[in-house]
Amino acid sequence: MSLVQSVDNVALLPAYLAAGTAVLVLLADLLVGRAGATVAVACVGVVATGVGAVVVGAAGTRRTFCAGADCSWVFDGRAALVAGVFALLTLGVLGLSGPLLRGGPTPVGEYCFLLACSMTGGVVLGAAGDLITLIVALETLTLPLYVLVGLRRGSLASAEAAVTFFVVSVVATTVTLLGAALLYAATGGLHLDRLGGLLADAPDLPLIPVAVALLVLGLAFKVAAVPFHAWAPATYDGAPLPVAAYLSTASKLGGVVALLAVVQRALPAEVTGPVLALLAVLTMTVGNLVALRQRRTVRLLAWSSVAQAGYILAPLGVLALAAGRVDDVRAGAYAAVVAYAVFFVVVELAAFAALVALRPAGADGGTLADLRGVARRRPWVGAAFALALVGLAGLPPGLAGLFAKVTVVRALLDGGAGWLALVVALNAVIGLAYYLRIAATLYADPTPLPTAPTRPGESAVTPPAGPAVAPGVGSGRVAWPVTVALTGATALAVVIGFAPQWVLDLASR
Image (cartoon, rainbow, N blue to C red; front, side):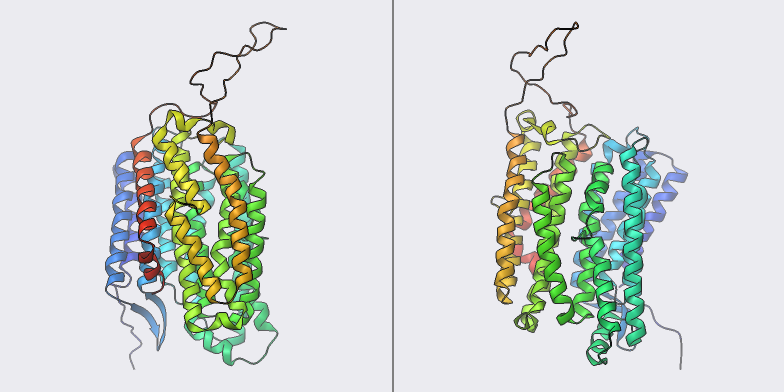
């Protein structure tokens, strides 16, 4: 009997392209030494990764690294969708990083290399067929972000954000690994498809619920679900704006994909369903209520992202009910999770792209007061920002966000979880308050800025009404890479808003 296994290199092509991009970026930075060439190599590699994922995924399901019927690599339509979205997010963040990399203190080669490494983890994550591959891919996605978060040199907030993110992620990874180890001790299996059968036939051991809880809770850290969310606002606010955009989109997408993989294919629904329903309710409610009180823009978007994680997890709450464990209902719930995650990350990227376009290069997100009236001076950027905010709120004309929430509510109603659908609807109404507040701030009359007194004892002089510029808001032309990224993200949000069924079809594969 031959111990040599054949490897399907075509199935592995997207991972090869993503990892090759990281290597080529380092070589370009070493041999050419020009920032433009390094970024161009990164962009070409990212595009090649996305195209490769689409081509391989269109050919049907491909498996490799198999031991009998159990495979560690399964590249299907959903894996292709995940890989393609990661490639698009990475390309968008590279565009948003143009002003940060041009002549600034940020090392271009290292920055692009770390983004490519993180993208590689996301590509592998979508095709992971066992717990080891899944956890390693998730850490490959996360590890480069520790460094990227702390790249604002001289910023204490950036250093604190990096340390907070590192410590919390290490704890989350430890908890996840402990849960995986206990599952292996109880069942002797690691492949996701096999674990489902092993857990169903396993004796009633107290070890199994503990292992399942640890695994789910460890992955909940990655999604920033309440009560494992405290790291997200400080980390987003301290990171450079393009990195915050990547954290809010790609990092969250990775956590959702990992959590969905173990829930759908391995863990018992009667155990995970109630836990996920409770996490969803807490996450969307706490995220929305705290977002109402935020005055810093990135912190508000961070708490909004926490609330959105609750909406993403909500369809998995149907597993808590017997009616939600019917095959058709479960398939609809899983598709709703993937579809909502895709809708969310595209619209969220558009929101961050607009914020980057409105802020000076290298600056943080500033406060909501800094955005007052900016849409009057930059109407196209303001309109794109407002459209993204309306989409996150789930209102027309932000059709992507509207269909995302409709998809979640429909999955909950199909599973008999009407009470959870009501919680989603109520939280969506709460979210309107702060999303529409930001949109209204963009179009508000600019507040005239008082001049400083010229002599001691004199009062400040208010200039005549005019095109006042709030402090910290860039008033020059938007860099063309940011313009391209903003235009692309907004256009993609509009396209999927008019063709939501296409995303749902891919998510249900």
